Image 1 (cartoon, rainbow, N blue to C red):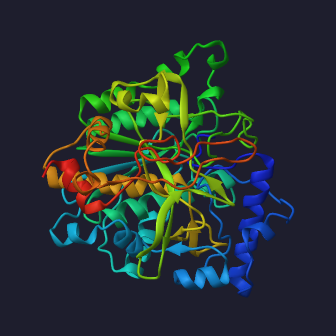
Image 2: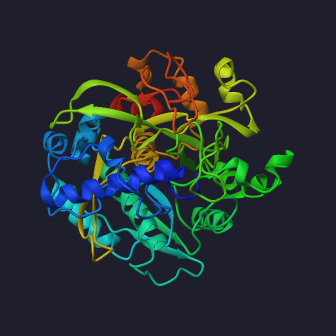
Image 3: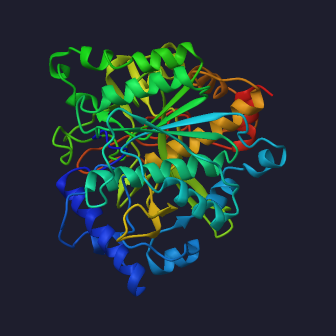
Length: 457
């Protein structure tokens, strides 16, 4: 995927998303119902920009509406942070005082958002979540924010989603937002700045978890087609440093199913590919599920792999990295290479998250966003909760995750996802299956059980 957090695919899928964005935006004004399928027949009027994949609500609403009203008015499910807290069984942790207090989540995004503090406070007021002061670190020459620049507003949307949902899950964790000055696209552009920034912030702050809602297709890196992976290997220094400091690093698995973007950032490869940093063995890859919840956040159906009219959960086998030791027990699924994702959380656009945004004066208000760039900050909050309960950093999670998955789910808190697949565009993906699969990884989590199991308490 373009190292945008989770973005566009082929011209066809871009057209679908752009049209859906327009259709749902119109709904916000008129109340007319528009399904994704009818929206897909509309002409594409702009190229979806690199940022929050699956952002579909073009016109800001004055207030969020309920799930049942979303289904009736828009044709998709929509969820609040309080519904996610219920769905992931997090409230018992909060009642025990496990809120992320004393722990730090680092979020890395190009350009950031000039209104992030105000927007987070508005978001918090709506849902009764305690405020926090976001610490903003500008890394390098970050340009003055331009609300007419699609790159800037796209990344501001991603920033908003990342910060609001990491905070919603771990309300007392300290959030450090690192803004870099170069947008990631495909290949290596922007990545050295992001890796430099991550290493520097881990050095200067007491960091527990780094959340990365971006990725670039492995095939777009220089040398890949010749089997020369030095261009990726040279970027791994931040993750090696994080591992040495026991810092957990997460990355979104992507929004184009088993394929991802070519170098132009809009077309998709016509075959299965994978992306970095999601495929890095030092990183926990976070995939996407579709939740079906009622207005109170209770499940009315088991979670499925995210695959709706707007996108599908990234997952597959790395073309760069050999199978890490912790995946030995799932080698029958991954073969000799690293498989992704490791774990999955809510990402479906038909199951979108409410965000509040005001960085673009033409579309201030409540918007709906989906993508694995939603799943990743949600999981970063869960990791922060586990760090607090453990009383120390948990470091690389993958060895723990794969060990826990060998235990009964009542002990591990890891819930298998056995329905759906991550086919997208013309590329056949992988089906969910019992145990580990290349669509959902090990599955999803029951928050209270999982946090206790991960923390060893």
